[in-house]
Structures are given as structure tokens and as C-alpha cells.
Picture 1 (cartoon, rainbow, N blue to C red):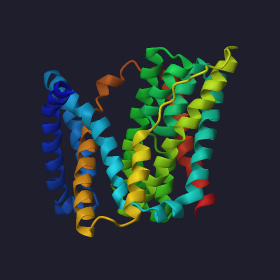
Picture 2 (picture 1 turned 135 degrees about the vertical axis):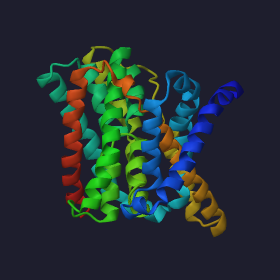
Picture 3 (picture 1 turned 90 degrees about the vertical axis):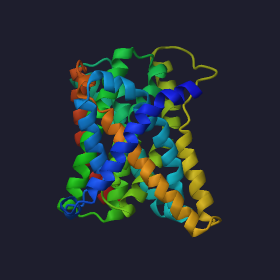
Picture 4 (picture 1 turned 60 degrees about the horizontal axis):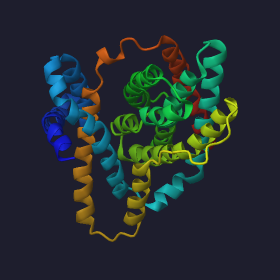
Length: 338
């Protein structure tokens, strides 16, 4: 554990420096005029660094970058609960839950049908790609892999699609919101983001560049969607066993999204207003910077060279699902929220 943390220090140091630079750059009048947040600047700087730095540099900082995109992000999500109360969760309530269930279910069905029938994909590749689009990005792909007994190249391709379309979403959704093309309030747009963007990090990257109201509802909706991972994996396990003609396993390992449960627990604690307001404000200030670090690390880990050799059928399927999430998710948001 200590050696792993020690190996992460150089990368975390670089991530911290770039994040501080992003905050300073975001203070420029020209960027403030277009509402470009430090998170957005950090993502862009991270992408530039990740793709321009020599391979030796990238290898040196990679452990810290991975720590930032995984452990640091999940910890920041847990402490984001100090911005939320159960009253806010109940206000999003059934609307966000219904949209999440419909998005997960319909995206999986569309992905499996379109992938196997029209693209002639192996059903395992179709399931992996659809899981990444419908639930929580790369985490859902990795959790799904052992259940469907996928090959490593299938998993890599599915994760690659999450990187491509999740990153695209981070930049597209804020542009759409600020353009005024969609008649949604900030609260409704937050639900739209949380219900349709791929990974948790992508949701933070998109919602965090718009406003606090958007980000709060996006996080509540996304955490609800993440917690659907457990029942999805159980259903997928039953489907896989019946499809292969095998009896159900007595004990099937199911991934529990601990950071989503932690987020709910912290929000519940925060609802009782036990800590002084000053302490909560300090926690939120630190947490905002840590979220910025994780977004910078995400940008640094978005290296185009890693996407070479991606299976094109997985990319085509992910593109179809991306269009469905953008347009179908918008329609569902209008139906249940507006």
C-alpha cells in the first residue's frame, strides 16, 4: 500500500500543479466572459499534457494519474454529499429514478438488439459496450466482464468507447445548455446529464462547468443510476446462465458501488446539520479542488494513442447509443421533469 502510494506521488504532484494552473487561467477575463470553469480548463490542459508529453514522462506520472481518476475521484464523490441533503434527493426522487431505470433498460435492449442483429457483433461485445453506455462507464464494463466471460480485447474496446463518447459528452452538454437550444431549467438539465452521460467522471466534468444547481441534481441522478449496477449484474447473471444452458451459480460475485453508498450516507449525515456551517464550507472548498484534480487526471489519461486498434463495430454501436442517450434522454426528461 505504501509503495503504491509512493509511486503515485510524482503523478499527483503534476496533477496538482496543472490543477492550480487551471484555476489561475480560469480567472482570466476572457475565459470568465464565456463561463469557462477551472474544471473545463483542467480537463483541456490535462488532455494537452497527456498527448504532448514524452512517453517517459507519461510512464512516470501514470500511477498518480490513475490514482486521481479512480481513488481520488471516488473519495471526492463521497464528500460531495456535504453539498446535498435528503430533501434534495427526495425532490429529484421518483422522477430521476424512473428516468434512470428507463435509460438503463432501454439502452441495454437497444444495444443488444442493434449490435447483434444489425452489426453482427458477438453478444458479449454488445453487452459490454451497452453496459458502458447505460450505467456508469468503464466501471460497468469491468464489472460486467467476468459475468459474460468476455475476452480482454472485447473489454478494452468497450472501455475505449466510454472514453470517446464520455469525453465528447463533457464538452457537448455544456455547449448545448449555454446555447439555449434546449428549454430545460438548471435542475432539469442536471437530471438530464446524470441520466445520460457515461461515467461518473464525465458527469462531473460536464455538470461542474455549468452551475452548482446543475451539478447537484446531476450527481444525485448519477448516483442513483450507479446503484442500479447491482440489480443489473444480478439480472445479467441470470440471463447469461439461462442463455448458456447452465444452472444458476449458488454464489455470484456482484460489484457494490461503495462510493455511491458513501455519497448517500454523507448526504444523510449532512441533512442533520451537525457540523458547523464553516466546517462544511471548508470541506466543500477542499472537495471542489480535489474534484478539479480528478478531472485534470482524467484529461491526462485521455491519450489518443490508447484508442488505436479499437474494434470498429463497438465504436459504431456506441455511436448509436450515444445518439439515443442524447435525444431519447432529452425526451424522457421533458416527459417526466418539465
